[in-house]
Length: 126
Ligand SMILES: [Cu+2]
Image (tube, rainbow, N blue to C red; front, side):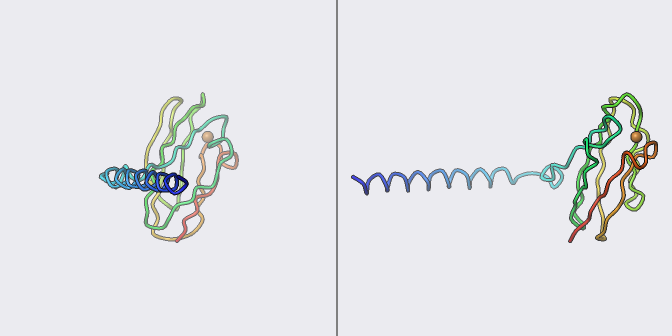
């Protein structure tokens, strides 16, 4: 009796594991870009995502970033060293681009209207 229960549990694990494996194989049929879900930055109350968080990316692996303005004033998102400049994003608008770098390092991102208040770091790692 005890052996039967163990066998049933073992078989259950094998079935669930197989289904999980098949699911992964099927869902791999994606484009490069949709595999890379990317990140969202919300501009609100003169901050990026409340805390101006560091953004970490891997070298030579572009990360999709969508920047959306939920403030009542315009902002922009600039990374001089990585050639990113969204231009002014008005209230309710958004802009999508890629963060891409072929060198490691720490690069400043900022809003040109609110530098110091709206700024943080993009960290590119190996
Ligand atoms: Cu701003």
